[in-house]
Structures are given as structure tokens and as C-alpha cells.
Image 1 (cartoon, rainbow, N blue to C red):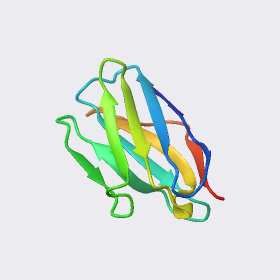
Image 2: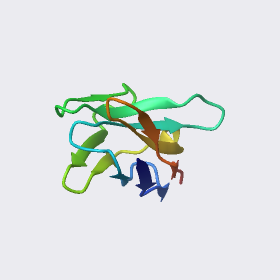
Image 3: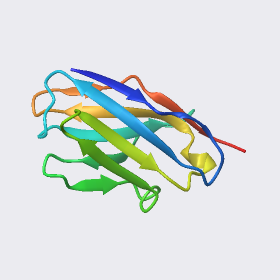
Length: 114
């Protein structure tokens, strides 16, 4: 399984970005998909997740601002981020669990700064 994350960049506070994670290999609609992030000097934390049935969960810090979604036909999961804050600055990683193994993408940098 390979996960290719993209869409990061530099954005001003209050702005928006959409991250994408394209998956290949043993990934299907039953695969659990998540986004994590890691800021400098901090532990990696869960940002958002989507289970096989479509249920979602979010970190309290991003609720109401971030939305996770997936396109099963494209094997791609998205993270729509709005009202971005400087504290959202981090490397964002996608993660997949197919019931047998878990996989990490390579990360994409998101920087929120004026």
C-alpha cells in the first residue's frame, strides 16, 4: 500500500486548504482512513478519521473547521481545512488501516502565517 499526500502549502490565517491522499494497493471502501499532524517539538496527533461505514471523528481543536471526506472510486481521502490558524501549522500525514496492516503517507507541510 502506498499513500501519496499533497495539497500543503503556505496560507494566511483564516484561509483554506484542501489536502489529498491518494492510495494504491490493498485499499478499498472498508479501509479506515485518518489524517494526523505533527508540529515541531510536539507529538503526532489525530486530526480526523473516517471509518469504513462513513462515520467521522475530529480532534476538538479542528471541529467545525476541518472536514474529512473520501472518493472511493479514486481511492482518495481529502481533508478540507477552513478558518486556518497559526496553531494548525504542522506536517500532515495520512494513515490507512485495512484490517490487517496500517500504513503512513510521507506527509505534507501546512504553514499558516501572515
